[in-house]
Image (tube, rainbow over all chains, first blue to last red; front, side):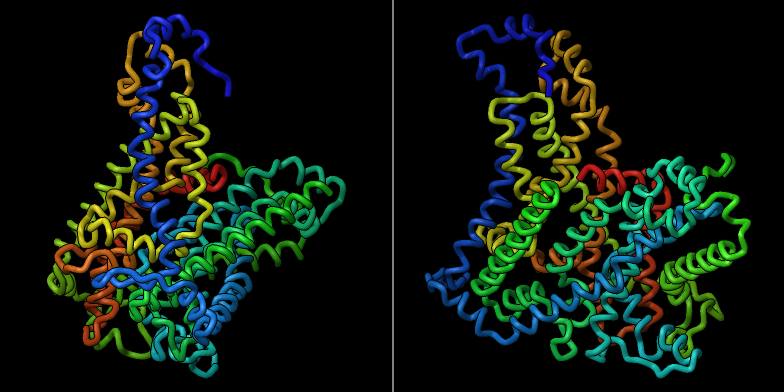
Length: 307
Length: 291
């Protein structure tokens, strides 16, 4: 961050030579920042502060709010639905790792080795990502239909048809599979940029030293992607722990609460039970847990570097 | 594909070995299966929209329509007031874009170039918000908009659009990359800060504005949940919200018309993507590396 203005000092002196020149000089700089600062306070920091405050209040839009102490938090811990939701969220996060996390990594390495039609494969993999959410839900409801194409395929191979949506053993898996279909392309592009940036002479050298293809992937490609994979993993954990939209749109948390995630329960507390205070308290608890995870991860990382 | 293929993990010599050939062939097969899996639901949506309702419901499903019913489009277009919802979506998109360029553009320019005292403090004040998970303050955010009296107006989208730390960071990084000499020269020639933003920074920033425009467009086009909370009169619904309420959750609706509407909603983002694909793919990896 070198100060580029040194060459300009005489000019600046001339423009702001008065005693209050220092303020004058920066007037425009502050004016440029002003709208952003106001907007950030009004639409981010105020809601965040209100979140901390409202979690101790009973919110009533008509009669005004009343202070209720820790009642909201007590309600959260007593509600059996909350524990179901926490369990479902953890199960969902686990499934996204098992079903979804490795796919873009493998796909990016495979596509980087394509000699023809690499561009086409990239576009095809990314295309579902631009399909709007509402279209995705309509499309996959039909795909998963008892008389839809997936069951058609299962029957062709002699398997029993599965009602993916209404069977509580399959519903979460169905959602994770649908989301993987939609989202892996964008992660794949990020990994692909990483794979393609590995210098080609490394492979050349390894090959001359007699390393087989698998060893080259094992000892060159994957280690080079290590930081990226770790980063993507953390991002995925943060975003999947807050997931609710597909669960809401496709199944409304059902069947039998099998897809009721924690964030979906927040939404339900607020907009079906109209209990904004408890919903806010749940949000604060989520914030606390995620911050804790973040701090532990940061500490571990620091320990890693020190070792 | 005229330029010669640069080697990757595999060299030409590797591909001469029979075992490698088998594995490579299997890999290509997997990629083909993947591509088919990716394209099948999208093409199915398109073709189902052209079938008769009876044909959509047959089992097992057929890929191509037996008769091409183009009149489905006319029916789908009239089923809900698509033009009105489209107009609302474009309002949200344009307003958000203007706010982003105005509020965040000026702020990131100031942080990046003008370096006022305490600019680092303001920088962290903005970036801190990136680390707070969005769903943890979703409900207070809604209550806050209600307190401000912004519910059921487009201002509930336009104003908060200026509070996006991620877009701020993208623009700030971009401005950091512009050579400071250009601005020095402008200052020597007597340009004010406003002038050097509008006449130098903005024209140079077309690429980053275009990237943001694509992000903001896809957000305005895709987001169905938040607008369904914030807006409650039908005449204000955005396209995605209207589709969610009236098409996805429709109880009695012909499946073929449903798919026709879904297809119509899916086409504009896909077209935008195909037209700008080189540009978009580059910014996806760029945003990842920098963010």
